[in-house]
Image 1 (cartoon, helix red, strand yellow):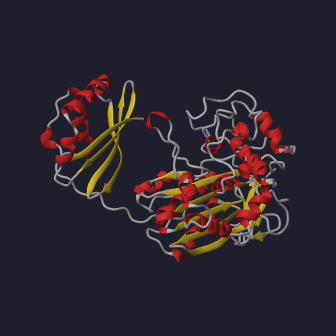
Image 2 (tube, rainbow, N blue to C red; image 1 turned 180 degrees about the vertical axis):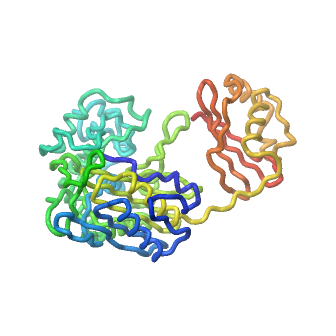
Image 3 (cartoon, rainbow, N blue to C red; image 1 turned 135 degrees about the vertical axis):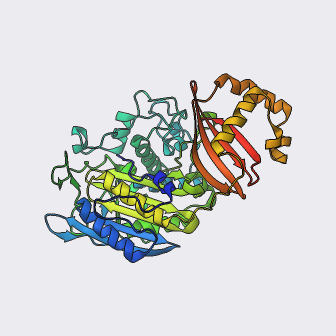
Length: 469
């Protein structure tokens, strides 16, 4: 199971002053003491049982602290060493296991699934990369947010794959993104077949132990003083101990438990090249490109976004009684790890967004440009392209040369079919090469188009590109 916990888009606001708690407001600028006080106030205000946080800034741990109770009944406080279930954050570790084996030449990410598990549906048409990118078409065995009757009985990984990956696909492989825990169970089986080891043993020997992740465990017994207790609630009722998924269900898709300091250790190692070779890291952090220029904003076990033009790698996690959010900013070697032992996704999401805003490096200011606003200019130039008559006095020299009469004519033939746009929306404004860079969305009766336009301060259009949404 994986809920969308962190809303990276909120980091685009550039403001840390929006309300997140009824009584607590986040600091307006970065400061460890102020952040610590805010988190403590926020967790208490929102009624979060237990919360464990690590903030890494410029490659160093700036804050490492637990808040609230690891166990309500025992009254045990959250310590920085306490293990929490991290759910689907596990997927970046599973992807790394596959990519480690690929780097050693023991498999290829383009290998078909049939090379390892020939009995699965369309196994010859689905690659290991398709599984890591969630574009395989295999149905998700855990799309709900509660433990149903299936999940209380243990299951073996190969049986789970047989049940959920031998029927009809949800869609043609490679044509859509649809989150699927099933695909990562299959990847865990591939690791076992190639390495000759149980998945948990391979993970321990190749990643957890070498990185010194001594407060992490794969499919543990989930009991003892070192483990937080997970809590659930329905209809705003008081928290009660959660019923966990039985052994085998989460596996390589979400069975890792860890302290936030261990996840921070992993984040730094991954960002600084101590886990994967450059080729494998690039693949892991590159969003999958689908047909017609569409991308998924998802690499291999990682969401990949660019708020303010800065690459952010992240993933949420959710299993019964626990939520997690792990976020990395490679450009500044910064990371934010939030683990909680309850299922209040709204509270964790708002906290994650508020803290991430403080960690993001300041955006380059968008240059001031002479002339009308970007949306107005883009709409006018688009209409000119539709008509095949472009006012070249509005174009920069190189773009004017690039936009030959032949290119303009061909574009006109395609674009005029769309008719007039019903709306033109500026999605994002940023700076690139001293230019105003506007990303816009134009909506027509027949659908929407994405438009990229760059202007220099003198108002000249240096580039305008049009893509299907």
